[in-house]
Image 1 (cartoon, one colour):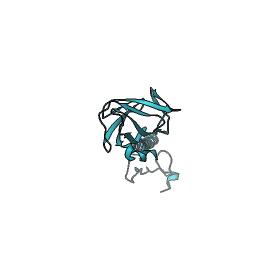
Image 2 (cartoon, rainbow, N blue to C red):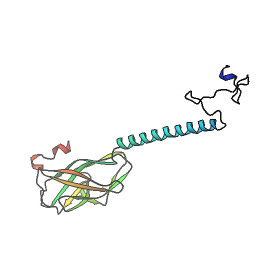
Image 3 (cartoon, rainbow, N blue to C red):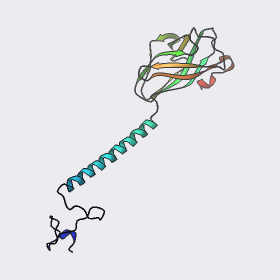
Image 4 (tube, rainbow, N blue to C red):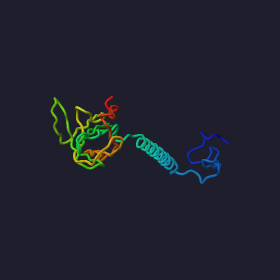
Length: 191
């Protein structure tokens, strides 16, 4: 029998005897079809689509699993009030996303939280605190910080929860250590 390259398109060898057509696995098949190339192209396109979807799905899962939250809070300290019901709070805000604004805050000890800033020995309040994108903002002494008034008694060595509300990231909570400045309890934050 001549090689496959000598077979005419009708499926008959050059000698006129019917050719034995096999399917892809070597078993006899129904014979050639005009739709076979279209079927093969459709299967190839379908396989390519499935591979593309699987790759996109895996990439999406990886991106979601490895993405950091837009805003992260850390190193939160509240000096024990020297005047009952009045103190400040300091913490570090890390913004892993686009620009945001800190618009309000509250504590688990109650009271009212406002935003304060100290510049040129003058203290003033702020309506919100800008948090630049992909940046770290430190709420620290002699800069921008939280002012807490009217809260329940806070004692050194205890903890409270600070909940900060951002315009885009929403409400995020952090545990804050109540420190006693007289015994150097907040010095770790300042270093």
